[in-house]
Figure 1: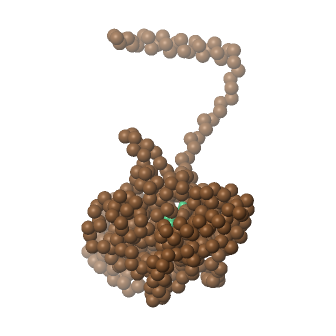
Figure 2: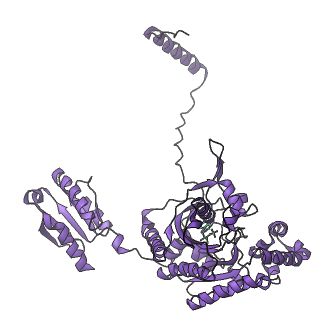
Figure 3: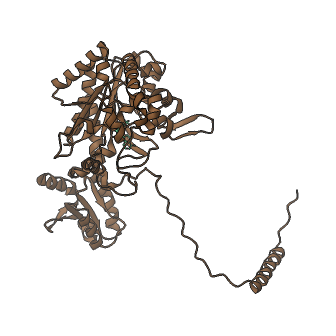
Length: 501
Ligand code: AMP
């Protein structure tokens, strides 16, 4: 089609018509008061997901450093699996009748039609990687650790987010009970090193055979009383009776008291395995509480299962029965929190309100790798929730690691000094962390920032110092200044900081 030619004449004509139409309208309708345009809404982080800010940097740094040191120290190799996995992986591994798979996964079909999910947990992906990379041909057990974000679309609550971070270890390829004790003892060392008092709750849920007869007994016990159960537990009785044990509804907790206990149904091999785990823990000086209600909600667990809880300093010996939480979907009685509220210590609040919040948990999953198409490969592992740990640390007044904070501020006056300051900054930061506000002009403004950052020394470079090839080192606490040779600044600063330490 030939393009219509737009001429200047036409534009003028159109403009005139527009002007005439406006005049006619204005004559008929009264002018509406001008409504100021609504300011655009400020985007917010998705519900249940949070920004991690510099104010918490020292806490994140401390937990990550501790996790890395322990993992490396015990010979675990780092693994990073994709944030996205095929939906089928979690359905097969975690179980189709679990809350995670039924309600909590973020899934979508990508442009190629693949059904993908944001990973809700790590073990299934680590087991997949173990099979995919032929790790069964490596010397067993293969020991791996991971640290990263996970996603569950849960109801945001105190200490429960939709994006959260976990550190975890997995030891794959060996069923020896000493490995259960090893991984548990490493998890507890983490808390000991960070001076966080915790308690370990442990149980054995046996193998599929002992669980089958136990489930029958549970159903026999609960069926005549099912009218007394909460609605969710009525369903659980049909599809996953083990989960009746981690319900937190008062009427279900009451009924549970008379329920048969799994440990009475363990086959000889499972009982023997569990006894050995406990013996190794005893040998390692690890204290624990036997808790028959710890069942963990995921399908892949067998034999040893455990959870770790914070201990209020004045309440180190709470009743075992008070502590079950059911991380994987047991009815939770925590105070619901708007996740926007800055709660300084959800963990402590939960403790003081009598509710509990697991800092981590784990157990054995001897059937998972075979279920994913690999050879029969026993395995054990745990994961700890970093947000809850950080909240616990904060509540205990964990102080910043001073070595990480910048202790030097570089101030400059004039453009030549600004250029020199940038160069000096690069030289200095190889030895000590330093900060500067190079865009600022006035010395007063810069020293105010230095004060706010609580640095120990400020290095000041002005026009005179550029000419003299010197710099001023100002002791920010004493207010004393001295002039030093420019080439000696780094050495002088190091000497001063070492003298302070
Ligand atoms: P799980 O993978 O469910 O066994 O969880 C292990 C640990 O991760 C828990 O004990 C919590 O500390 C933490 N965790 C699990 N789910 C969440 C969540 N939605 N928000 C924050 N932390 C979580």
